[in-house]
Image (cartoon, rainbow, N blue to C red):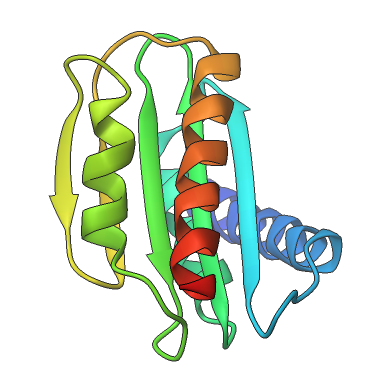
Length: 136
């Protein structure tokens, strides 16, 4: 019962966090890009948060965590643009020794130790590339 309650509460917190991130990142040019870097965030929580955010139409999600093991999670809504697997491969090339993969709508990877500031730089570059493709 305690585990079920903890899972329920964690799910509720992820919902509140997703709602806040959506409010903080309004649509620009018909697309909403949610980019956020965390310190030592659990990869499963990162994936769950990305999935919740990507369930909102026109949304692209670029999340990462730095610390003992860098992790990137890229996702998009079905109606949003971008190839998350290609974008992830480019981002991982900026983190030496990182590996990962996925699909056009959801991709994840990571591996090396990286400070959160470096993860934020990688996410910013991924957003820049994505926006450049939107204009092209």
